[in-house]
Image 1 (tube, rainbow, N blue to C red):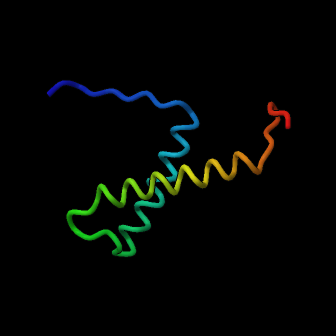
Image 2: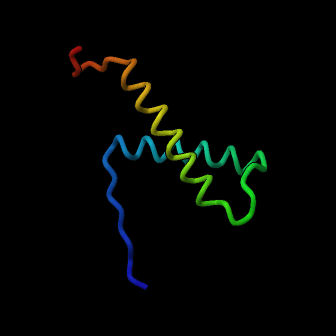
Length: 66
């Protein structure tokens, strides 16, 4: 099997970490039925992106101007 690699931008990595936390919460809560893992992973990614986007819109970082 060939070695796979992945290179994420910092903002993408933040969304991945948030999505993993959301997805693991769904798993722990027993909300992910067998065979529906992809559906719930996709949902977790969408929710993490929404959270990141909402935070970005609401917070001005040191190098941003409004």
